Image (cartoon, rainbow, N blue to C red; front, top):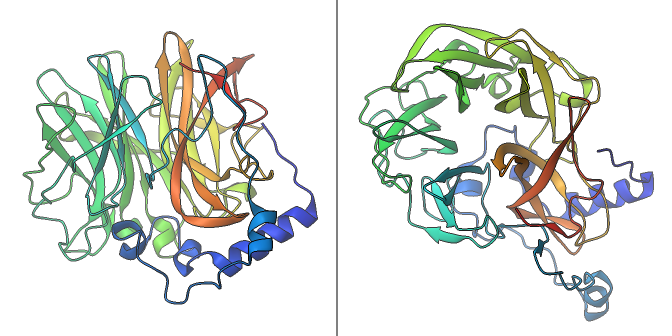
Length: 374
């Protein structure tokens, strides 16, 4: 799905974003300042002047059309809920997200993927290895095991001051998750740290995909895959590099891996470029196995900013996860809120059908038009 905005519209969007977006929006994708994540409601140092009545009337979006029965319209979560991951357990959907609103791991619950109830912190206590004054808990993902649930998360290691990956356990998908370890599960200190862990099962083997945080310090970024022990709490063998930021559209970073197997083909979805910029997007690679080798798809990016008039503008979509409901795949991701044509400071959650044509993933032409509910 490609969007080709006019040059004038792009120029206007960048001008508006530059005037209203907080300074943290141009920070590297994996180095969010704590104020952005931990206190998203804090007022900026110098607020822009209030718009006049005439300007407000001009910028006001048109009312959303009445939805037909059984249809929905994006976004599906309108709270600040970055880096969403969605898990089904016993017929209930659970969504997890990067720290915000005073929570280390945000958690929501839904019966239908459309109406979400916000729940208490899924991991209220930090592990001993996490820097307490700047925990930076990002990108949680959860997998169910035979006797428990394991939450993989990113946090700042107090010893190295790098972002590293930990694993916490709980008896229920809603937590409370606890990491009893005194060190991270994995931390590639020489490569800038490790973030964005994502578990994947292939037959009877488990794997953990993750990304080195090289963009924190001028190093290349890679998506890695490594076998997990059966309990999901330790790694086996050596990590394998799958893809790197070697394509122009990817900029200086790739991140947020998601692996999917369909018809004996392995698909590695990932996000790339500056998370706060208009070029942030989702692509994919075709892999021969969970440990590679992988080759970037020729039609990347798969999902990119939809530069239309609000409320149909979708800005910087990414950090995707993929679920399956009754044989239908859905892609869930975040995008920046748009207020009066300019980027806000919250990331909302979107969901679209993921179709397949000749072995290629395909998204709808519009990300925001009403669509049949799962």
